[in-house]
Image (cartoon, rainbow, N blue to C red; front, side):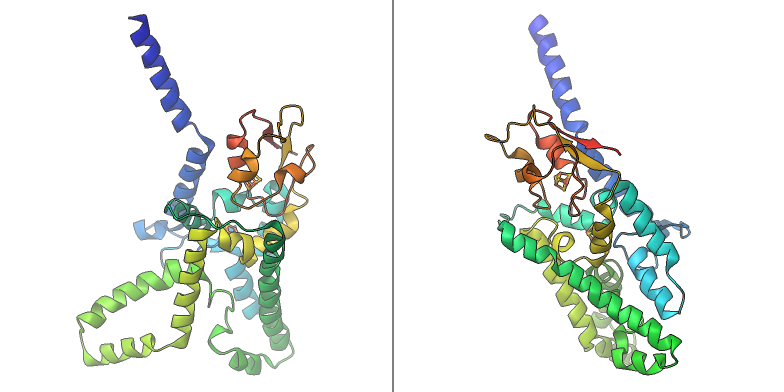
Length: 318
Ligand code: SF4
Ligand code: SF4
């Protein structure tokens, strides 16, 4: 009888341990945010919220303002983007890039792709360091194009600038963003293609044929597929190396109140690298200051906290 009770207790504790995992909580938060941000599909009105995540301003079901999309839209309309900039700065200072780890819908898509069972590519630290700077170049390009448009409009030559940039003039990042292509363009394309296969009129067929011959559409699809394939082989590959939104957060998150602390007394670094192995952002946790580290690449997924067998790592605030 006692043996049965003990077995029952151990099953309950195993279930509890499985359910109350940080990773499970994180996935629940990520999925809830994903549903909330796309709740327009259930008739929910847009929320008065601007967040530094990658969603899609172009989707009709979107309920939140995407900071980077709003920045380029406001610059295009000659307004200073104080609201999206304030959102990025405040969130990064308070909680680093935790919004990347817990809230961003495009981050969730990459996390889900991690479970596809494809063996991951190991990237050396030197290559990783060089690659992380690519996202700052993408950010710089974004600032030059969007800022250039605002300055040229203010000086009365905006029209010429717009014509030079062509279809990407209004939003250089959104025009090519893999997130916008995934959440806004691809669903629309699927619907349009249904009517292409079963045409409703010749005029419609011709307009779809026009759309399908657009180089911008194929560029967008190529970038999206490339980024999704990258995420299959490199966990959070887009977030690590290419996302300009993540780059903005990373710049400010060095000074974030939220950080991680590694207790040197508990940490058995000589024999264990469980935290480093678990980290999707390839952070050299063991080489960072133990008192508190606020690495700009850290997305506060807390996988290192969960992976540590001696519970040596924990969040630290402030
Ligand atoms: S780095 Fe970009 S895509 Fe990744 S989670 Fe952050 S905002 Fe989203
Ligand atoms: S250091 Fe820890 S919390 Fe930060 S990204 Fe890596 S595993 Fe996640």
